[in-house]
Image (cartoon, rainbow, N blue to C red; front, top):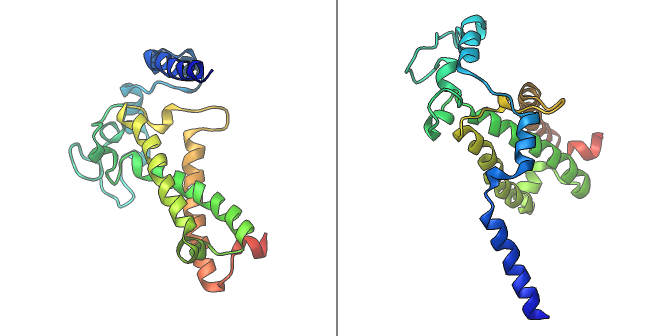
Length: 199
């Protein structure tokens, strides 16, 4: 019996290894329902018509080949350079996406952990120590899952499912970043967990 279990345990993974992930019908179905092709023509049209693409927050006009700001067509993964340097540049696709996703996870984690432990975020991270270990372990997974599509020429704008659009994720991420920073500052003043005392 042990021999038959060993054979079946080794046969299944070997069979799975033989089938490429790209040929999986479930992936094709997900791609058809959630993925939108973004063309260079659409990007150039938006670049010409969108006022926010004609000058940066600091007032500089985007120039081709410059360090910052770059034109939309050069900084997007679909049409620009797909190197880590380009994706992680100040105006690249990765920084806001990854920081926003980490902040969304962080604010939910802070709420749950404060309710369960009664400790502030600072206490969970540095005094107790376990929170920091879990968070540091989570960072590479979220970063990796965010970077791989970009290196393959796909931005977050290409994916949407129902209410889960790139715009919604962007704004939720921005609010979560502000919220997490506000949480840390508030708890440093009141010396008590916000979610335990007020919610």
